[in-house]
Amino acid sequence: MSFIGILFVGGFIGWIAGLLIHENVHNGMIGNFLAGIIGAWIGTGILGEMGPETGGFYLFPAFTGALVLTLIVSFILIKTSKW
Image (cartoon, rainbow, N blue to C red):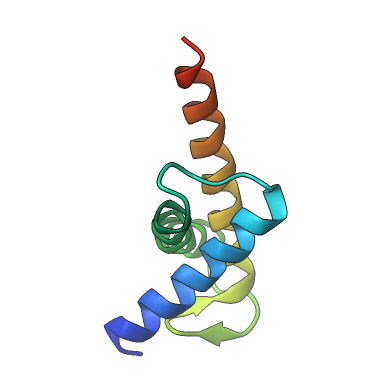
């Protein structure tokens, strides 16, 4: 799929992950968007090809990777901002 499709699917996955954990990555929607794209790429690389494929990402590993990356980044930003 095209680069625009990858951005759209990765951003949508990041947005959903941000809604589920009730935390926004730094810079709100843009941070969730970037965490979604990067997390989807990492999740697909680690977990492999599972489930349906859309926009160059397999949905289950992409969503799992985006959710984990959003949690990690949110946790790190919360811990560092309190110091």
